[in-house]
Length: 314
Image 1: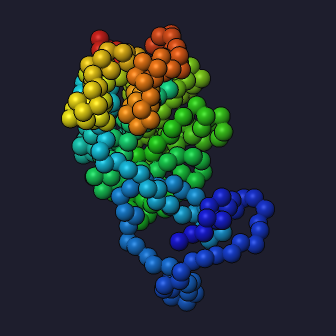
Image 2: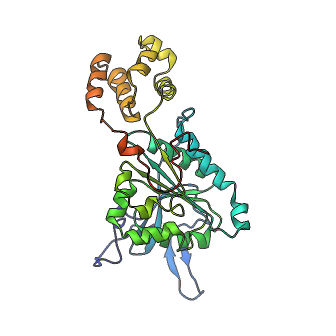
Image 3: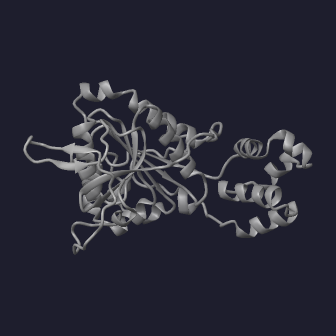
């Protein structure tokens, strides 16, 4: 196991003396002459979610504990459409190969904060892990490409989802051209779904939003519908518990129109866990609720169809 002191090590910065706390188990050799002590080896990365980092010994994948069990699948929502979009991509590999196309896909999720983009990402994570694939959290383009190349030498057929959360911030912190090259498939990207999220689509330039080869589909993840809010509250509270606590679930659904998932969860915590008065909790959350104007999320963003518009959706 790599020491926590090494996780932020960057070989391009000034070197320092680091101590290693690796449990050596066996020897590694590429030529049968020089041998390096190493820890336990595995043939393949286990399905899961990973970060790519570097230490003095080189690049490594660190498995991140992420809970995907118990995820709520809301009925008739954009999240369901996004999951089906990605599932369809995984099932069309032979067709991509037939026409000699780069087997990759880009999907962008946009919408107000707390609307459920992260929940959608988790559903796609769970799906690819069930397929025996891995999720890579995209932070730096150089580490991603280096890690992907090494992964492909060992596991050439492993499906990969690259999660680019808050892509507007990623573009500000990194070299935009490097990220664009990765999205274009210049670096031999194959069998990868790029899944990006943003709260601020207006911050993204046309080189991102106006190129289908980079993000082929975009979906607005808006506030949960009445049916989705009902499912969410029933999942959190349960009908029996609601009856015991004299909670009117239909009133909760009615009073939370245009509330985000984050607001719904806080209402549950405030009333059920902390035993605040329902009317006080609703009043507080209504004041906290960010007013999001339609123009911030519904203006045309360049290419093709807006997947959030039923009239445009194929």
